[in-house]
Image 1: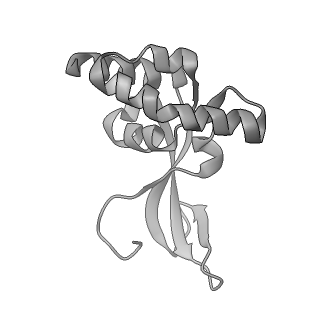
Image 2: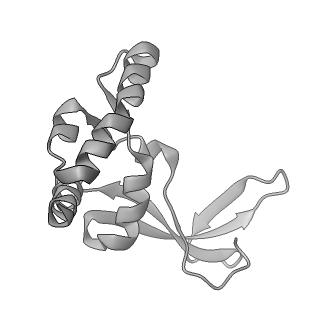
Length: 125
């Protein structure tokens, strides 16, 4: 991965976990795709209640997609990355001399990201 020439953006799990969705958000999703997502999310809602006592679950993939499709809804920081000897990914400031240049998602505008996702699904309906 780090040897490629592709532009890389890392979405850390601690950031991705901040994008939680529950029944209220799922109800906003229109059309057959929305119905499919609601039906498929039932087990994730049950799991979140059982394991974490929450009525919502993280939607990891949406944040990763938003980093590409909605760049203005996602805040990134430039870093340099290298694989550490223990195979961990080691990140350093962009001005560090070693490693590969990439970006890390640090924050996102949840309201903007979710609104655009809902609008995209509505356009498909």
